[in-house]
Length: 300
Image 1 (cartoon, rainbow, N blue to C red):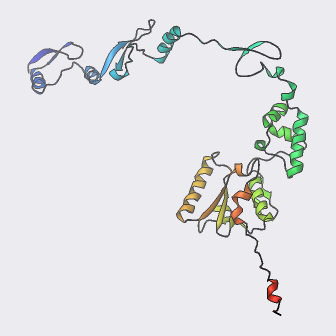
Image 2: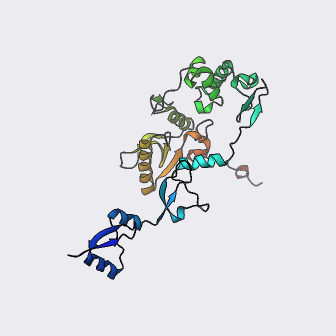
Image 3: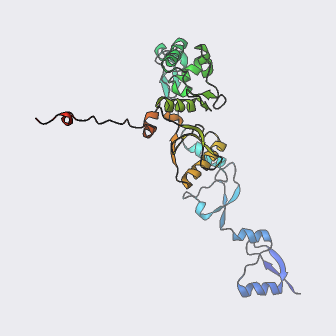
């Protein structure tokens, strides 16, 4: 076995190798490397560069298409930020004058602080309590947080929305599905929203079933009127398990070509849209054609 020294095609280091291996590489046009590391580095279509940060000067590799037109490259984002921040001017905040106290401040606000806000824009506790009572008097229930326009002010004045409801002398709304409700027709509902839908059907004298099964499956719909199923999508997007359950129901509906009416929280609050959504369930009143008087008149 003859050993001959040859230069590495990547690092140019002289290393010993068998003569038969050298002849084989020349025959097939292969390049020769001193180690596996040089072999892998040679396969990379990269160029060695020096970091453009003068405080770093680190050597790193970068692909040709990643090299910028300016040919100034950085080994990391932090090095790029150091150099670019020195080149570009720092933006000075635009100062405003508070119309109340005259002090300078920055930001999108009109006043420097909540203390300088005029009293006309501050909603007092008494007004919030009166509006909650007015809502209860008109609709027979306390408003949900999303129904009350100044709910942020209520939370700021009382700490939480439920505390504002308690201050008005009412019991706060329970957590969704934590309390059962009884509709006017005696049906047990899982939420206040379902009770509102059930009461609407009862007020329109529409016969309906509660928790009706989808054909021979174990899945049930909230309501069923004749061959039409009604579902209230109350927790859509809030719980993954709820979304998976509703997807299974929708697959059954699509597979069996069933009729479904979807109701979402936005259809109930702040204003009810049930008259438009469930309009097809209302039976038109039958008009009785009265006999004409001409039938009772004899020709003279």
